Amino acid sequence: MTETIAAVQAAPALFDREATIARVATLTAEAAAGGAALVAFPEAFVPGYPDWVWRTRPWADAAWYERWSAQAVDLRGPERDALGAVAADNGVHLAIPVNERDGGTVYNTLCWFAPDGSLVAKHRKLVPTGGERLVWGQGDGSTLAVVDTPVGRVGGLICWENYMPLARVAMYERGVDVLLAPTWDNSDVWVASMRHIAKEGRCYVVGVTSCLRGSDVPAGLPGRDDLYGGDDDWMSRGNTVIVDPYGDVLAGPITGTEGTLYAPVDLDRVRAARREFDVVGHYARPDVFRFEVRDPR
Image (cartoon, rainbow, N blue to C red):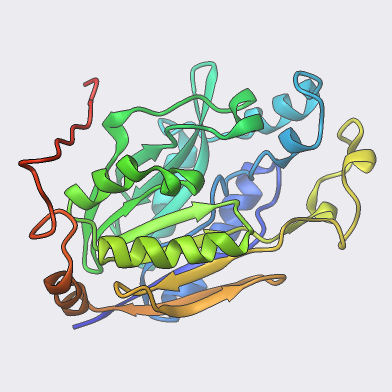
């Protein structure tokens, strides 16, 4: 028996949490109508990726950060209920990346909501990259989670975490069947990496990227017109792709447009692929190598 996964490449309503959650609801309903049991969205989708950190001078972005962080998601607040309702209303597992505000720190967090609307797990990005370190805190080993779903055992690594070999091993050790990779990476190398990781882990890999232009940045932010142009100024052209356990591309990549990719997940195919190569099974050498995840809990 197979189940369908959906990878949604779209633009959030930047700096607007409620409007972005409304978009999540609409796009999730469309994916569910298309038969998806699991619906995945791009990195930091609610209320949007902080692209300005790559375009402005460090610490000169107070107005941008304040407006963005004020729209971040409190996972103990009503936003959690709103996102849970999206999953429940559509009877799907929802993988939605958010900017999570916890105290005085914002984290790049991937959330999993079950079809009953409950938040069953979350993962905070371990290492923000470059300018991202000015807006996001670091996650820790307590959130390297996997979730059991009808699609299989689902886990996620955010953007360049997928280039961290030991983070990938942590997912493999947990028996991941579907690895979600929400990202901001638009490079050709990213798609090749998704194929490599799928073949290495003998799992399905879902790379999900936003599709955003300069014209999507709301007016009124200081220096906005100096930092961003119009429709031709791409922040992210998109790079969404779904790959099977042999490294073959099932859907995508799509660039330069919004859209949703669909692909079937067949766990028998995962098992067949691991007969050839099981990175934490018969191809592992625990007598030679030792692996440990430090969980601070």
